[in-house]
Image (tube, rainbow, N blue to C red; front, side, top):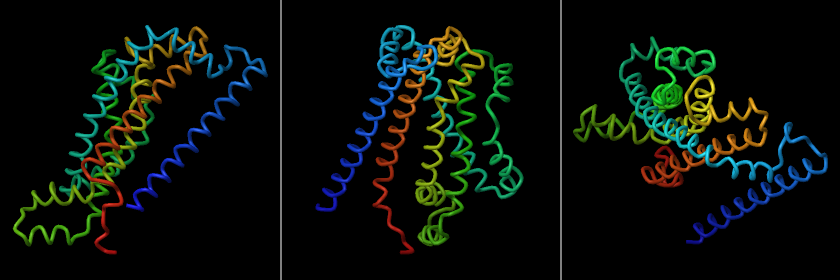
Length: 263
């Protein structure tokens, strides 16, 4: 009980420190823009960004809905495909030996050089952006799934098989459970970039979404609106990261509940 209260106290202290740091940063930012008389087209103060966001909300909100839909749906496909690909690479050694280096290297592909091909193949519609986000999002999940499964100690399988479990049951119910923390690490990496990927794909070619809205703001030199789009992407990313963390806690419990059998 005392440990729990101490943990909550430490967490509250950390959150308070973060909140104070953000308030101080925003105050310094606001003061600098005002005192230095920075042109609005060059940089914007927090109050100018808030006002611009409020005034443009009737157009910003529909664009946000499109990008949010692309990101969440694409992320769901990325998680499913990433885990399945990771399991397949782990189960089939020949496949892993032949393609794992390519899978690992694919994470370094710059979106801007490959996205035009996706535009040619799938067009400017929302479905094309979902495919792009899913494609880019699956790589870290697949890689961490492979690494997590390889890191599972052999005695987990030995115990399960000794108790009469089949290799397939052991894989899906034992090994994946033990590797789940590392898999969620890959899921978090993917979640951190999913909306940036969707927005960049829209910016390179789409009919609607935050990327198109951002392009219009840039072309008209509306600097506050560029910050507004950035804030929306950050909020969506934080929301998705929060969902991932909640899912991890519900499925696996708190991190400190994982006991190390080798300890």
